[in-house]
Structure formats: C-alpha cells, structure tokens
Image (tube, rainbow, N blue to C red; front, side):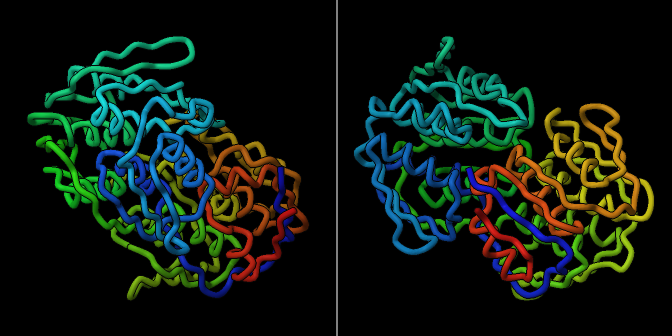
Length: 416
C-alpha cells in the first residue's frame, strides 16, 4: 500500500479541472448492459472504481475500450452471465448496480453480496423489495443472492430513499413490460443523468428529479452517446482544501446547478465564490464563522461532503455542529482530527461538535474510506509539519491523480 506525505502550510493557488462524477459513471456503465448496441461515455474519471467495474463487465463478455483519455466505448452484445467473476464482484460495492440491468436482460442474476468499507455494508433489502414488487423471486444464501423471474411493470414503494436501489429499479423497469411507478425514489443529480441516458437509449422515463418516477418498459434499447457531468463531491473537496489553506483558486469544468447547498453554506461562513462559464473561483475568508451542517437526501447537503467540512470547523471562530443521520461510520475521521489538535466531541454516532479555531499539527493517519481519506489529506495541507496518510489507494477509488492535481495548486505533497 502507498501513502501520501504532506508538508502543510502552503496556501493552494492556481487552477484545477474537475473530473467526471464517480456516482454517475458507475450506474451509467452498468446501464450499457441493457443494450446490444455500442455506447460511448465521455468525461469518464480515471479512478480505480471505474477500472474494477470495467473488469467485471469484461468478465461477462462485454467489450470495453478507451477511445481517449476520458472516453470509453462499451458494447455488451456478447454478454454471458455465466461468466461473471464472482471474486471481483464480492470485493466491489458498486457491483450491486449490476442487479437491475442483468435481471432485466437475462431474467436472472446470481451475485455474491458486494462488500463494504468502513461505513459498513449497505443493506440490500430496498433493492430486493423493488425486484419482488416487479415479480422477481429473491433467494438469499450465505454467500450469494439469486434474483430470477420474468419481471413486469408494477407500483413500487421503496422502503427508503436509496439512490442505488432507485437506479437498479429504473434500469430493471426500462426493459420490463408495462408501466412501473417508483415512489420514494431518490432525486440525486446522478439519478437524473441516468434517466436522461436511458431516454437517449429509447426508454420512456418521467419524473426524474422528483420522488415519483414512471417508466414504460421498452422491448429493446439502443446505443447512445453520454457525457458524464462534473463531480460535485470533487468540487466540494477542492473548495474546502482551498479555503482551509487560506488560498485562492479556480475550479474549471464545474456544473454549478447541483451545488446550491454547498455554496449556501460556504457563503454563510465567509468564503466568497464567483462563477462564470464553467469556472468556479474560490476566495478564502480571513475569518471563518461557525456553522451547523445537516446532511439530507438531495437537494439537501450530501452525506459524502460533510467529512471535509470538519476541517473548516476546526478553523471557525466558535462552535460548529455536524449532524449526519444516515451512517454511523461517517464520523470515524474525528478521532484523527483530535490527534491533530482539533477540539471535537462526538455526541453520538451521528453528531459531532467542533470548537475553534485550533491549530492543527502533522500526524500519521490511515485513510478509512474515500471521503474521510480526502478529509485527512485536507487536514494535512492545513496543518503545521508533516502528515502521512496511509492506504492512499482508498482515495484512488474516487479521485483521479489527486497528488498531481494538488501539487499543481502549490501543495507540498508526494506519494510513496
């Protein structure tokens, strides 16, 4: 395993391009399995999660090749579900998104339960409830789950606002005969973009961006060209890194429409931004105000972005609270921030109070998951002295060439 070695204290300055959305590209790649025709995907981030998913669909017999640095061509004409690499699936949580398209196209799918990270395995009950409502039979074993049956249009009420369950249900319904209504559907931007892609492939999808989505199943779907939108989580990560180091930088390739909650928060605490022609300019605040951050389903504040804001809370003048009601493991980075000098108290598995400002000092840390790992990198950039973040490969799952891009902004960071 490799590590980041960071010498803090440099204000980030300059310009950095934002990559395509990790949370969008994974279901988009899986949706290619719904058609026998070629699909071209543009603005694909070169991250390890994408590489893993490409290997998995190749194990099924799909053709997948890069036709440019960030352009991917996939043709799933010769897919055979009997060839699925179970070991790769078991080690990759994103493979849960294979369920919907494979069930829709082949009438059955057997998958080992995808693994989790420090946040924990996500229960798949919501996915199963959607498939069962459509007429599928779900058989859970100790090592794998088999979903089979001729699915049809149905009314589905999801037990929770699950993004991946919504995406699986939409993909399955796109080839299911009849009309499917999904209630309590997730409305996240990447769900909307998946719906737009399916419409371009010939599906009938209504209500994307709302909590009720209606799909009229098609007999077949065609190929298409799809461009992945910019990663709002990466925008938030770089924005916090610039602000935490007292820098000034421009993020390019930004789609600002999904950033309302993030920008509202940073503006309220004194950080200034300006936006024009896909460029977001970030101006650090001379004094950061304390804040209350509550994560909520879209259009609320994204749970994946609360962790980096804990670093800003350590530099705010007063008491801040971060409340994430979704996952117990989302505050696992806080003890490491305390070791670096933060004044933070975890109230319960979902809430932390951070008092500032407090200086941070370098420390030796382990990256626990993608977002907490990015948080510790930001803390190292803002801290005095040297910080070492182990298990750098964890961040490769969600960030392309992070070391090089931060170094281009003036960070003293290297990878060994």
